[in-house]
Image 1 (tube, one colour):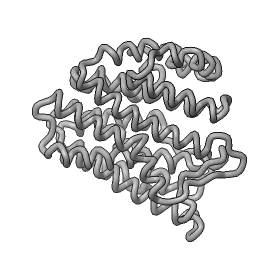
Image 2 (cartoon, helix red, strand yellow):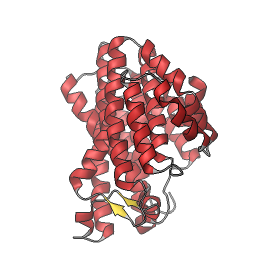
Image 3 (cartoon, helix red, strand yellow):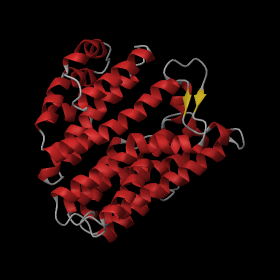
Image 4 (cartoon, helix red, strand yellow):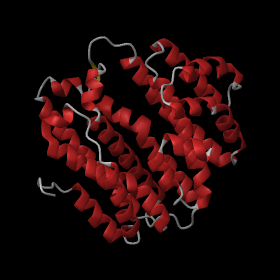
Length: 319
């Protein structure tokens, strides 16, 4: 499972090693299963109706309501359509992942199943809305976008928090309900950054996550800027979350997406309209520098906040 995890997400694999040992297996397994369902939802070569049916069937397998044999045949077709060898390998190894889920401790297994059910609901909505589009289709309201970011990422903040309080004592200096609320905002903010970063490519693919009602009432750049400010606020909640964690290893692993997210937001802001024409991404060398700086800063919540603020600051052309 480690080899599969490393191949589908090098950055996540790097940070997973810093998690306290009791959290590594359930979080890794949940990530792999969610990545697999996402791959199924995104396999554009297969008709949307087939993707939706397969997602729903796999969701029942993951919930323990169906045997894996029920979904084995369609998954072979999905594996064959993967251009990325790592994604193909992940789909081919889903039986092992499902078997591993069945062997998990009951509480961890229940939490993994709950978060996966929520994520798959968001992926199903995605396929239903954008599955076989010809013209550009947009989400209708701000509420639709908020719901989407919760379903596919905000729920992960809840999941992370449940596992943390169960396996680590003490986990945080704040109460569980406060941490869960911050974790939800954090996850939603990370997904919102993805939405904004990929907005140009998504539109060329026939979908737009920015609300149609807002785009009808204001220029696209203004709508984009407003949601970018919201993403920054939500990721700021993530830094508050991380600062409350008592274990520095947990703090580093949890904070890294926020640090990269802060730099991505700064790049999106600096690029202006260009960000909606081309994909903005933090360079690999800069990610390595953020990793090193984050590792040092995670020893202190004050240092972590300062690093977050520096990464999110606008830089001049010489910086």
